[in-house]
Amino acid sequence: MTNTADPDLQRVQHTIHAVREQAPLVHCITATVSMGVVADGLLAAGARPMMTETVIEAPTLTTVADALLINLGTLSTDAVEGIPATVEVAVRQDRPWVLDPTAIGLAPVRTPLARELLNSGPVVVRGNASEVLALADQGTGGRGADSSATTDAAHQAALTVAGQTGGAVAVSGAVDLILDGHRELRLERGTPLLTRVTGTGCLLGALTAACAAVEPDPVQAALAATTWMDLAGETAAARAAGPGSFRMHLLDALDEIGR
Ligand SMILES: Nc1ncnc2c1ncn2[C@@H]1O[C@H](COP(=O)(O)OP(=O)(O)OP(=O)(O)O)[C@@H](O)[C@H]1O
Ligand SMILES: Cc1ncsc1CCO
Image (tube, rainbow, N blue to C red; front, side, top):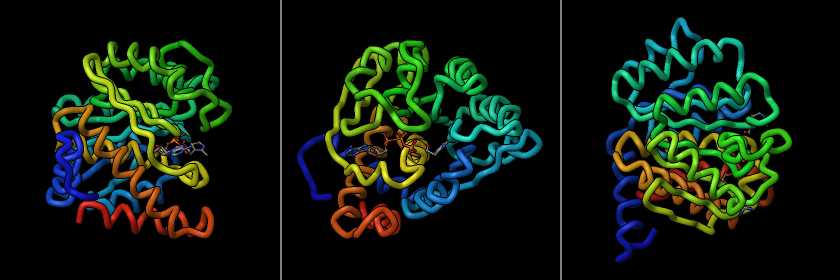
C-alpha cells in the first residue's frame, strides 16, 4: 500500500501495523472447513489464532483472548452450547466480538441463534448479502454458503441490523459495503478468485476481529480488514495459475501488506 492523504486509508494502514505490533489473540469458533485458512490467514496477518468450540473449554480460553469470532458455518452440537457461553465471557470482559452468520436462512438452528446473538452486541456483523438479508428477516438466505443477492440489495437489511446491535455491519461481495447508523463506505476491490477458495469470507471475519482488537471504531476495523483482504486477493490473483496457487499466494500477500 502506498502512502496517501486519504484519512480513511491512513487509518487502515495504522490498524494493519497495530495488528502486526500487538499480535492480538483471536479466539475463533468457525466452520471446520475453514479452520485451516482462518488460522493460517491470521498468522500471516501477524495475529494469533486459537480455535475451540466446546462449552467446557471455549469460555475459559476466551478469558485471555483479545477478540472473538463467532462463525456459524458448520455449526456443531458442541458449538450450539459453546457459543452463547463464550460470547458471554467476551462481553463480560469487554472484548470485541464479530458475528459471521454463515449460511443462515434455511438452517433451523443457526438462523434463530444468529438473531438472538445480535442482542449481545457484536461490534461487527460480517456476512454476504444473502446472510445479512436473512438476519434482518428480509430474505430466505442463499443456496448454501454463497450469496444469491447483490450487496446493494442488502443495504436496508444492513441498516436494520446495525440499528439492532449499535455496531457496524460489513456486507461482502463484488462490492463491499460497511456501515453503521452514521457512516457508509463502499469498496469495489478484490477478485472473483476469492470466491473459488473456501473460507475467504470466514477469514475476513477473523481479520475483522483482529482489527477490532486494536481499533476501537468498528467501521474502521471492518474497513481495515476488508481492504487488507481485497488488496491481498488482487496481489495473489496476479501471481496465481488457479484456485490452488491462489490460496497459497493469498497467504503470502496477507503477510506482505503493511510491512
Ligand atoms: N466478485 C468479486 N469480485 C471481487 N471480490 C470479491 C468478489 N466476491 C467476493 N469478493 C471478496 O471476497 C471476500 C470474501 O467475500 P465473500 O462475499 O465471498 O464471502 P462469503 O460469501 O461469506 O465467503 P465464504 O462463505 O466462502 O467464507 C471479500 O473480501 C470480498 O470483497
Ligand atoms: C462450504 C461451507 N459450508 C459451510 S460453511 C462453508 C465455508 C464457507 O463459508
